[in-house]
Amino acid sequence: MIRCQWCQQGKCRDCPHFVSGGPLRRVLPRPVPIDLLASDGRSYPAEILVLSTIELGLRTDAPLSQNYTVHLFPGVDLEVAPVPTRGKDNCHVFDILAVRRGQDAGGHLNKGEYALLTGSTGALVRELVDQLPEHLRAVARGKLLAEVEKAEILNALRVGQVLKYEAGRFRRLAGQEDLDLPLEVATSVMRRALREHAHQREVVVGQDRVFDVHGIPLDFKSGGILALDITEVIERERQLHRREMEAYREAIRAVTGGRLLLTSPTEMETLAAEGTVLAEGTVQEAKDIASARHAVASVASALVGRRLYALLLCLSEALTNSLKHAGQGDFKLKAQEKLLRLFVSDRGPGIRLTNLPRAALMPHYSTKNSLGSGFTLMLYYCDRLYLKTEASGTTIALEFDTEKNPAEIGVKQSC
Image (cartoon, rainbow, N blue to C red):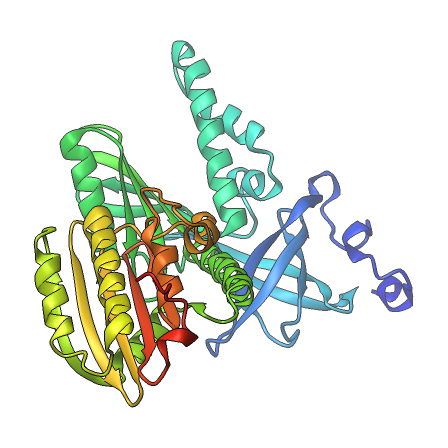
C-alpha cells in the first residue's frame, strides 16, 4: 500500500491498516510462533502479530516471492501468500488462501481456530458447553477452560507435549510437534498408569534429550501423557554445580597451599592411569583393613620408618571411612618415578559441597556425608591429596614423595 511506503513509524503491529478484517481484526497479546514451509522443503520461522479470519500479520525474514504452508494445529494446515506491498521491514501481511482440515477445506479460519489463536478461550468453551445437557455445563466448563489453558501454556513455552492415549494409540493434543519423545517408553508409562489406575512418573533419557514423563489414567483403557523436555534445566544445574565446584576448588587450593586438590572424574581417571600397580584389594569388614595394611607394607619399600607408618595410617583412616559411609572400599597403591600414590574409592553418597571446607580443614569434623574426622589427619601426613566426590561415590589419592625426608613433612616426632 502507498501508506506503507510512506510510513516512517515502523509499527505495523499497531497500525489499523496493516491487517484488514474490521471487528475480527485482533492484535495478539503475545506473538504466536509458527513456521513457514516452502515448496522446496525449506522452513522459515515466523510470528503471528495480528490476524483476522482471512489474513495474518507476520514478522518473518522469509522471502516474499512464494506461497507457504503453515501447520497451525494438529490436522489444520494453512496455505498463505505474502502481500509485499503491505507492511514494512520484516513485518508483512499474508493472505489465507486455504484452510485444510483433514479431508475438508475452507477459505478462512473458523470460530474455534480463531478463538484459540486470539486467546478468546472463554467464547470457545461457552460454545462447546452450550451443546451439553444443562446439569453438566458447570463442571464441563471448568474442566475445559483448565485444559485449554494448559494446552496454550505448553504451546507458548514449547517445552513439552500433551498426548491422549486410547485404544493403544497416541494422539497429540498440545505442545511441541517435533519433540523426539521415545513412544515405547511413553507407552510403558501409560500402560502402568492404566494397570495401577494411578499417576505414574518416569525420567526418560533419549538420544540427546531428557524428558520428565507423567502418565495419567482417565479410565480403564484411556489416559493422557504429559512429557516435559527438561534437558536445558539439567544442563543449567550441571553448569551451576561446575561453577560451585570451581569456587571450592580454588578456595581450598589456596587455603591448603596447593596440597588439597579437588578433581573432576576425568582428572582422577587420568591420575589413576599413571604408574605401576604395587598392591590392590577390597575391604568389606573392619578385619580386612589389617590385611590391606600388610599388603601395602610388603611392597612400599620406597618408604621407611615414620613415612611408611604415615602411609599405613592414612590407608587405615581412608578404608575406615569407606566402610562407615559406603559399606565397602577399594584400595590401590601405585608407583610412578619418585612418587607413591594410594587410591581409596567407594560407592557411597559422596560429600555435599557445603560440607567440603569443614570436612577438609576442620580437625575431628564428621557427618554422614563427609570423609570423617580422619580426613585432616590424612592431609597432615601426605604430601598432596586429590579428591573426587559425586553422588556415585568418592575417590581420594594420597601422594607421597619417596625422596622427602620425614622432617620435611608434617609427621610429628612422637609418631
